[in-house]
Image (cartoon, rainbow, N blue to C red; front, side):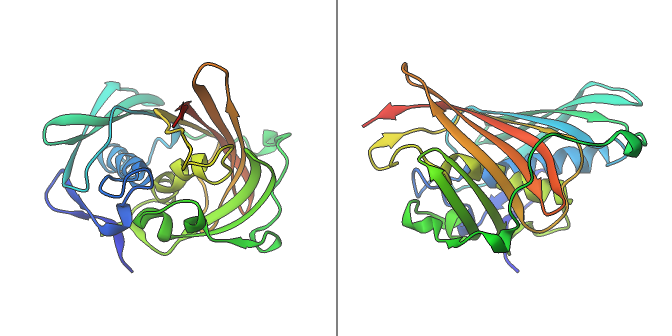
Length: 252
């Protein structure tokens, strides 16, 4: 099995061709970088306090070159922590993550949601995302998808490419796919309209299970160049969180 990143030092990582971006082929698709930052937080802080929120700010594009990752604790605690991680290239910050970590408690008797379940992966038709998007990252994924209309649909994604050439958690592996949401139920043809996201925030009520990752996604464009991609996140057990991405919409 190949990987998206190779470790080159205690805090440095080299992207493989599987990280190649969709908007520009000589840039990184940001999705694997988000998984890498999630892994860095878990590796630094351990998993005794599970992550309940991942909030990424994307400060700029990242070339297909070595990156560095750093982690610091902003708010330490025994039951709640706020941790910040930074991914940088050539000394320039490229992605910032702030993650809330919270101690687990037994609330199984209270568990429940009004969020609807997705059809299982085998109930949706296979779809080739390379018909819309180029790049090594998109080629590395397997999709099953159904659309109701432009900007509205459901899909499942998985990959046989590991996040890193070392063990990572199911959450880090899933976080490395979260950013695909913005391109799988497009409202407009990306050959005529640019709509990259400048952030991504995921709120989680439990850790996802390995395997297929599901998205119930709606894309909204406003009248003044701003957009929003909103998704409910699923594994094959059911919903486990939500995701939002702010878009800058730019007709060409």
